[in-house]
Length: 184
Image (cartoon, rainbow, N blue to C red):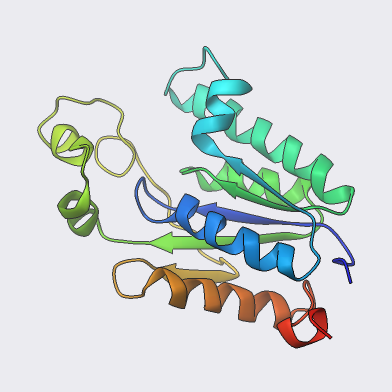
């Protein structure tokens, strides 16, 4: 059985909050259930579709709109599209929601303190000391979603617990087959 309709799982959250990890963990589970899945990772899209864009608000908005447009095309053709990009601004997320008919926002919550503690690259420490400018959540705003369909917290939940929460939501809303149905 394949998924009935395409949709977009729009992961948003600060850098290091688990967006890419969760999408990569969900991918094989969704494929096992017969779903056609594509991941649009923010770093990969920036490298391949948005090369040359900087980190100004305008450039960030352009990058997110590009991700939204590609997600719309894939979803309308039956794919489950998972986006894993910070997408810090609520207005641009609203625009993407408006262009994608089946849009499920997943907020990956985690405190700056925890993200700084586990940041192996030291980006948060550099941003906090002023070495990195325009860093989302430190010197650039991150607008927390007000009505995300799913909220997970990588500080208090394991990645496996978060994946289960997301799968439960998708099953309950008849977006994917249940594991039992898919394997029957």
